[in-house]
Length: 486
Image (cartoon, rainbow, N blue to C red; front, side):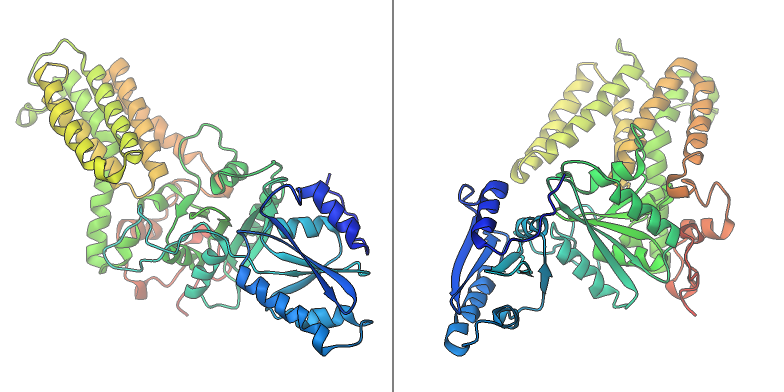
């Protein structure tokens, strides 16, 4: 239980408390600067590396000049407050607040004989500058993206939405990590019930720390267990985040993470990409259809081909060439799983391989492993072909979380086809659709607008409409203001 003791008037007691509580004098990055202002002691606490040292030096100079220009020591509290030349100065009264603010990168100024301290926000977190995310690249569009600093991320959003009703509610999560988590929404658009649900769920997170940032917050929000399908959408693009805010979504920003959580989302939200809205409606629609074909192939192409390989009688004569034309001692299902696992292992290896070596690794995999495996009879060429097409469809899926979930589902389809053949294929797909339709994260139907069926909304998913024609916000978000173009 955190101690709520008030700030003592004795600076020696404060210093002793800091030594016992946070290791002042033991941890090299914890700093204290002792000053004598108008015959009274003034102490300044901070953490090196989280603060802007230039601003600290400027504040010290301002405080030291008090001795040359002031003579009344009875009003030292007001004098020091006026000399803290910074745009963010607050007062605190408890030692618990003092410790939390220091460890968050702010500086705390305490004055002898006063039980109130000043907090000055001089945070300067280490991190990279905004740049285009690797997983959400566009041909045309902005090249800035979210970084690991929550202050920069909210600023990038405000740069795109200069609305006085845009809100960022910040709180602290983690008994030990005290990670900043902010809820972003537009007050007169977002659903109030949704905001309350997310606010309460985040407030109820009880854990010592969230070093894995947004993913840990998501698991506490939804408690989905081993369900592989994503209940939220992640984005590292500020323009995508701003677009969803204007549609009535609620966003969750977590410090130390370059990704922002978008809620609520459905299955079809994970199939859209920013590039579709950076092109003309016709080009955007074409790209969307190609992406849909890729996603469908990642799910159904390989199980369907495997079914035809097991049941050639299902094929008409014009498609009789489909299926393995060579015999092998290794069962087809084993070949498919080996090839699929091999591609997944190569993908994982590529992530951990330095960029200069990634090309060489790809050549080795394609030319040596693949070709030799065919030559020795481990694989038939058709298996490599269709597994590769399914893998390409997986990589065209904009959401990485959805692509992995679809891959797991595809493997389940393959097992069902291997055991039950045609009936297994039909029943497994039916169960898959029913399973997705039964999901309602944050009271949002996961397959909306397909199930339940909303023709106009489904048409907007199939066809990328022109912005001037999109006058209404998606009803699935239950926005307070449905009209976006009055």
